[in-house]
Image (cartoon, rainbow, N blue to C red; front, side, top):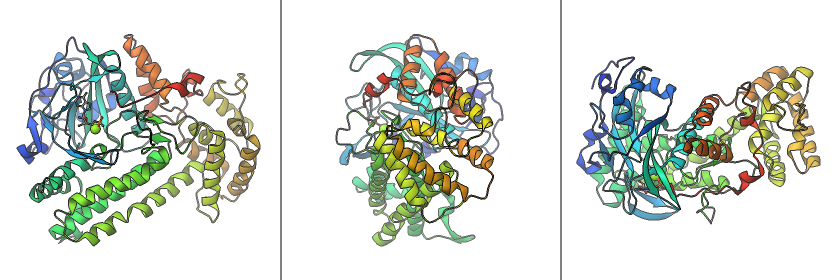
Length: 522
Ligand code: AMP
Ligand code: MG
């Protein structure tokens, strides 16, 4: 392993690589090349992610860059492979899955840490089953935008370095064209990677994978106190506890931005607590706790309100797998029990911030529960409700100006005048009654109102990756016009700050938005 990274590399060849996952050995993956696409073109490069990896702007213009991120040539210094895993899909054991359309190119030693680079859609692998190993441009734009949106919102997520489109036809409901997203994360190991070996009765391989994950990503599990090494069994219990906590916090971070993953199968759950595998996800427009974003999830197993419980169920499967190397089931159970308090604490912290409450008082929980209820009854817009709540009490001329700038006159009477918070609700009376209680509660805060407002604006986004916006970006990208995609990438990087001239991205969803159906067909 090399310790110092090249801060700015002008080419892939100049980067330092490490490929630690490959060192786990051939049980864990199959080495194989990617399958090149016809006429690949670079649609977009995420400059922030390029900087994380240590690329100079010049590097992105080289033929080598396109060659690697399109899957035409291997990454210099890399070790191309597809990983094997198993998993529970929609609550049912699905057996062996694996990287059916993903190739890990290798691990880059970036200026501030190591990053694995993985191509999604670069051809078939031994784990493709009935699939073609490809991804279409439509779903690739969605994944590319989602990684940026989540990162901008401060939600833990895999990142995306680049989006490539090509001419190869790909058969879905209709014939579409192929694309490749280059994804970036410290690791793509999933709960399903552990389930795979436990289900095959291979405790040694569960242990090998656990040791790898602990050593690289959870070194705190190696010790019980500074200088006091943990026993092997305790290390694995501590690993579970750490993953439980990260996942619980991840769920709270999803809930408070109205994000629905859509396919929370155990093979889509990151061992690092990252949001992983963007398919039929959605950010809610009108609030409905039972909102289902995946058209194929007819029972609503992965509906918005169910996500925390599903995560807990998935963690139970992980615990079950770790039981192969931790005989003490009680220790595993108590690690799992950390889920609920961690989730509730994270929700409380995040909701307080969203409502601009610096202290937590008796009655706040009811106040928040009742806000969800009035939002539910009116299907009030999730993001607008919180954004506008910042301005609702103690309105001043200056604030009204800021709000009308935020909303660009696209909401309300069209004159740019402020649309009151209560207008977001069909039942304005109920919203008004709740708002009066909120005003009273806010009056008890010691901090000046400006602080409350700026705090709220820093956590309640103005720009949201709504399905209809993703759809517009997809359609223009398909036509070869990358303007909308590029603008959205910029706005989503900082979704809290209003940008002049970008009002259309902050407007309410059009009528047709509610008709968009997103399924697993990607
Ligand atoms: P997902 O639920 O989208 O994460 O996919 C579940 C499994 O199906 C994973 O093992 C994927 O690699 C695999 N898969 C999905 N789509 C394809 C495809 N077009 N070709 C090959 N494998 C696929
Ligand atoms: Mg997946």
